Structures are given as C-alpha cells and as structure tokens.
Amino acid sequence: MTRPSRGRRPGAPDTRAAVLAAARAAFAAKGFGGTTIRAVASDAGVDPALVHHYFGTKDDLFLAAMELPVDPREVIGGVIAGPVEEAAERFLRAFLSVWDDADVQPALLAVARGVMDPSAHRLLSEGFLPVVVQPVGAALGIDRPEHRMALVASQVMGLILVRYVMRVEPVASLTGEQVVATYAPTIQRYLTGDLPP
Picture 1: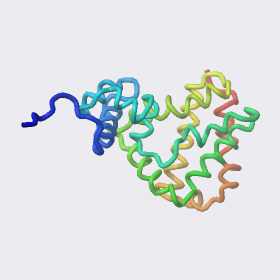
Picture 2 (picture 1 turned 30 degrees about the vertical axis):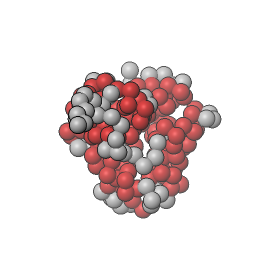
Picture 3 (picture 1 turned 120 degrees about the horizontal axis):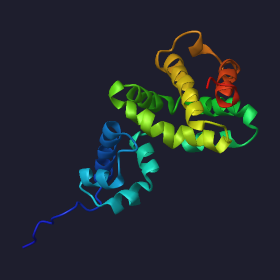
C-alpha cells in the first residue's frame, strides 16, 4: 500500500500558478522589500529552491507576478545607450513601441488598472519603481536617481491613465512623434534639469 506523501509539494503543473498567486498576494500586502522568496515558497507550499528554479531572482518573480506581456527591463534597456541629454526621447519611444502595440496593449491595460488600485500601491512604489525604473536613472548616472525617476514615473503614469485607460482627447489621438515632442522636454527636465532642493 502506498502512503500519501507528506511535506512540501513537488514541482507539478499547478505549482507555478500557486507560486505566482502567493507572490502577487505577498507583493501587494508587504511590498517588494517586505517579500522574501522563502515566505512566498512557504505560502505556496513548495521549497524555496523550486521558486528559484521557476523564476530566478526576486526581481524576476516580481515581474512574473505582475503578468506583464513584455519584460520592461528589456524594453527600456536601450534608454541608457546614448547621450543622457536625449534620454527622455529614447525612453518615450521605447514606451510607445510597447503601449501602442495592439497585441500587448490589452494586457498592459489590465496591469495598469491593477497597479492603480489603492490597495495595490506597494506594487508600484516598492516593486516596479525600484526594480525597473530607478535602475535606469542609476545607469544614466544622473544625480538623485530615486527622486528624479519617481518624477518620471509620475509623468508616465499620468500619460498611461489619460492616453490609454481613460482615452482623453486630444492626448489619446496624438501620434507617437507628437507624444515625444510634447512630453520629452518635461521628462528630460526631470532627468537632468534643475530641481528644487
């Protein structure tokens, strides 16, 4: 007679989904800094090594839990190549290349609506900002990158809300080049311009 197995669940088809569900709950409740791989594994009933096997680092787990259709680190990775004085234009072109893509926009809209929910504010403030956005500022070599990149994020989140979620005119109908021409000067000022002390 075979005894039922005890202990942690082995890697099964539903294990990945269980880990992602536990990670989403943990990141939303505790933020990025307060979430550990070990705690996510415990909540999912698996060994921490299995979480690392499926997802790699905590950064990778966070992005997988957000269910983004693209890895934003890859999309905006090219922003750091080239003169810092033109970084805002490169950033916006990379942003628009994804958000204006009809195949991925529905998934991005779902993520944006979830992140904008007040109950999930930590996903943005303690997850997306330090994992994806702030490293760009550090790589560009700008001063006060945490402060400056939070300002950039505020502009981009506003653009997402007005252009894609609420579809407010005339912003919703601007061409990509019009968006770049309109928003790049403000974002560039956030990156390299004078800011109040």
